Length: 306
Ligand SMILES: [Zn+2]
Image 1 (spheres, protein in one colour):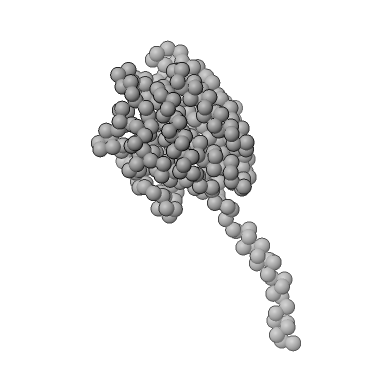
Image 2 (cartoon, rainbow, N blue to C red):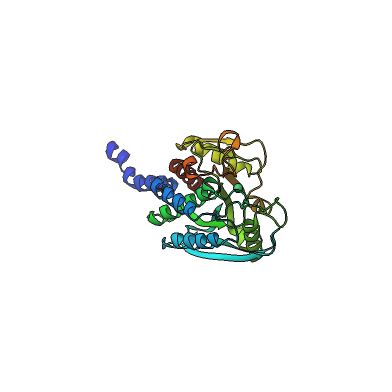
């Protein structure tokens, strides 16, 4: 009699215990991007040639990015064309936005620039790292999310910025055109309030990858990123950088959006490959792009609270 009394509550307790365990179980982890795919995206990007803002090459490149992103049926893909003053006069730019809904109604912005620096003298500048690597990472994440059977924990808006590179010197009408325009437009329309955070990827393809996270990033995101990189098999180094970097995350930081910039600001010995004709495909690797993209998705899941 004593034994039966002792055991009787267990069938009642078991479902309750299971329910508690399930309610605290983490959701499915983010999907991993494919190395083969990101490499193909990087190669195809570089093949478009001199993709500087306002060029015929970047128009063709923008069409390809939109078409490639739109192959993922779960995504709504659309251009955001706009004109802006530049040192070379009024110029037509186009951001590209690819959005996927998530389990919550707010979203994380994951971005990279797709324009490359214009050089009058460096005719063979191809921007394999400074341009193509970020685009390849974003397209790789879009493809991985398309194949994933789970819905992301929050919405994700992938944005390919035009006009990141300045023509002469960064200022009110030179450089960061796409990010300044998007931050302004989203503030006007109220969309910015739903943006939980921004994750920016720039120059993440270096074969010898060390992410140097600049000072001007939101402290909690930087800490989370460094921790996740340490915990999650990130194939590279991830370190705090001793100074601020002006990049596409700044217009969002200035409007109060938490933001972090995944950037490797040491490209080649003494940064010798940065903004030179040495920025070619042989200096970057698929595994660097993949590991930065995987880290970005893990950070996104962390921001969403999973
Ligand atoms: Zn650059």
